[in-house]
Length: 65
Image (cartoon, rainbow, N blue to C red; front, side, top):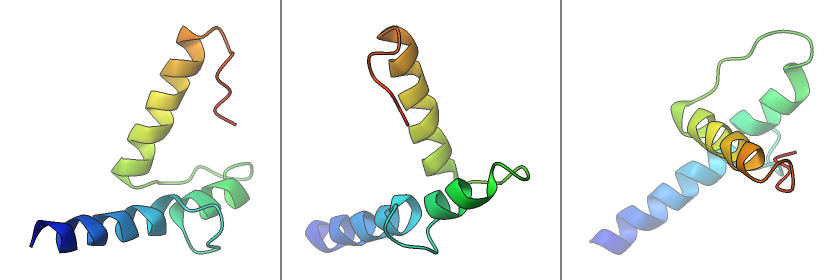
């Protein structure tokens, strides 16, 4: 059932990238990256890298923050 797998992937990515869930990788990064380096899951790293690229291409008009 592709739709069940798709829903599972959406839930997984939300668990990684939610800024509303205190235990998500994104929330942990936001709370600790200022004090020490933080390892992040590959999916989150790719999203951040892509967002930075769009920020550069738009001369800062797209603000990843």
